[in-house]
Image (cartoon, rainbow, N blue to C red):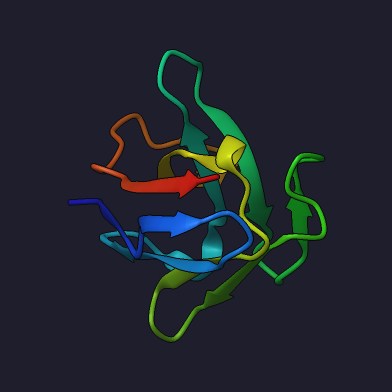
Amino acid sequence: QVQLVESGGGLVQAGESLRLSCAASGITFSSNVMRWYRQASGKQRELVAQISRNGIPNYADSVEGRFTISRDNAKNIVYLQMNSLKPEDTAVYYCNAWTPERGLFGSWGQGTQVTVSS
C-alpha cells in the first residue's frame, strides 16, 4: 500500500523559512521521480519542484532560487527547503511520485498547510 505523508508546514512571516518532508512507503523510492505540488485556496494544484531519480532538480519559475528540493533514498524521504517565503506561497503542499510507466499516483496524501503572513 502506497503512503505519502507530508509534514513540516506551519504559519510563518514573509521572509522566513520552512522545511517540508514527505515520507514515502510502499514504493521503490529510488525508482521514482519525486514531486512537490501545492494548491492554494480556490486554485488548481500546481507543480512546484521535482527531483529526478539521480538527484537533478527542477523548479517552477515562481520558486526558483528560493526553494530547494532534495531526497534521501536511504530514508525514503523527499524534502522541500523553502526560504524567503512570500504570502503567495500560502497553500497546502503535497508530494507525489512519478514514473514514465505509471505516471503519478492517483491518491494524494493529506498535505501540509503552509501559511505565510505579510
